[in-house]
Length: 188
Image 1 (cartoon, rainbow, N blue to C red):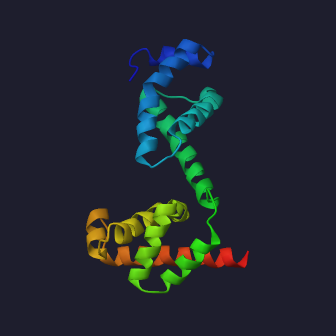
Image 2: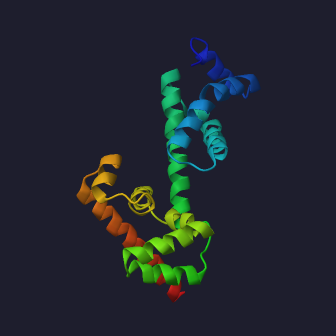
Image 3: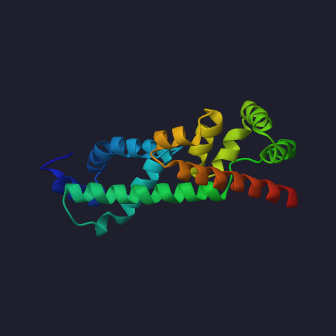
């Protein structure tokens, strides 16, 4: 934390003093990076830059002490992260080969052994991450633990702090989402 000189630094930053901005940045960039990483953000540096851009644009509207400033900055950071995560869920990063989708569609309606083989194939081609990115974070986590780590629903529940029924419901929703994506890819 900056401490007793915070009001002076804040006033100088409002006047576009580069040294003051450097002080603010050095003080809060590390904790912001930790926050973004803990939330699974991909491009941490870009998110920090975007957060500081919003801070710079709105610094004149801020009133409060150092703790309130930090809370304000983290509120902005949280909003930036939510925006990025929403954008990523709306727009998958890459498309998948239709042949992979056909075998996955068959496997979702087939035996666990067939699903395991398809998952291994998807993982070896890098397509598994693309599919997982189309799911919510909870759905992806549960599917990876259920099928990737080969854990039962009870064990996944213990690991994630969820009930067995919640794990089963999340698994069902995730598989339904994958089926929906597959159906959409065959229609278009």
